[in-house]
Image (cartoon, rainbow, N blue to C red; front, side, top):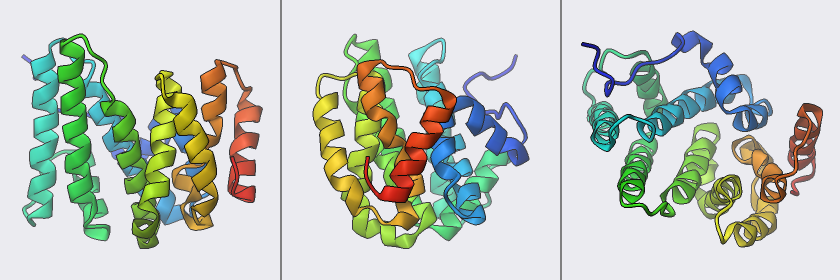
Length: 228
């Protein structure tokens, strides 16, 4: 019987760009403003994010935990210099961590937050874990673009948390979006492809639909002006 807890990609790794565009178009649109290599690294990172999100939708919470533990062990093995597990995305993550070693610790934090979210949902309490995970993901995205991101981790994280909070419409979402508005100007242009989609957060708060062109225009203006 097929092991549903073991991670599998829906598409070959060379088609990650198409998968991210279909599953997470907001981040995909922001990534278009990165250079070719940075864009490719973001696609690998966002594919890892999708693997983590899938753990939340397993038929049983324990299967979600097992899936996350598989990734935790895979990342630990990569960080310790062991041969990566035989999985297309694991091989790509090995290249990403080789380029940006700081990712291994942040990826572990990211996995812990998803584990906590599974437990929170099982207890009937949504928790703030996915909002915090959005901050970690934004920090990782900045780092794969430019090592200078470590100096801007607070601003990147605030933008990532604001975006997730707006998508989830948490009680503090408006406050988080306002905080992101203030710090986005501090994010260097080289890092804006990691978080420019936060400019869409006010529309998620208002549940107002933007056209495909409107979403692209808003992200373009955020990258161009340094404001959201």
